[in-house]
Image 1 (spheres, rainbow, N blue to C red):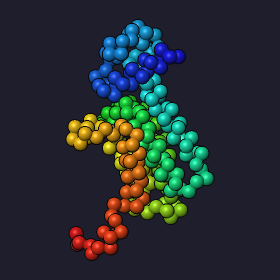
Image 2: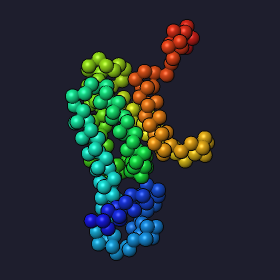
Image 3: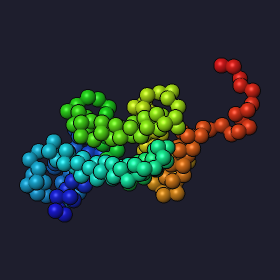
Image 4: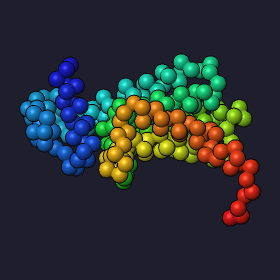
Length: 210
């Protein structure tokens, strides 16, 4: 129903800006011009509203990632991993409020973090760690760290730049929300992770002792 979806979108935006404790049903209603009784008609309390908002925000995103990986099951393991990085980066750009909420909730243990981990975070990281493990077993990726560790490196590299939009606007005047910048970032992450930063000439230079 359109009204319910509108309420959930408003709630997600409010939770992403003010956190769970800083948001209330009254403030959500006031900021987004929704009637408080209408919110209570659909949701009995703030916790139920928060979970429903996250389900709406994350559910489609996670389903999309699963479907993409399933469709590429016959592809080369590294190609699948690169495609995942591009799609994950695009989703970060498309759903900033979702990722802001996740970052807020991972600051400290809470029932909400436990819920997020059980329903979405653990399955998502298992998905990407599985792609890494396949590539490592195929001898395509170095096994210098376990798959779960590499999954954190990949998602962190993909996310952090886009999450720093306000800082980059102030510092460099660069808007990371443009498609051009986002795709350039995806390409850079993939090139650095799978090729490295050194040029061929730098790679042959005499190594300076540590």
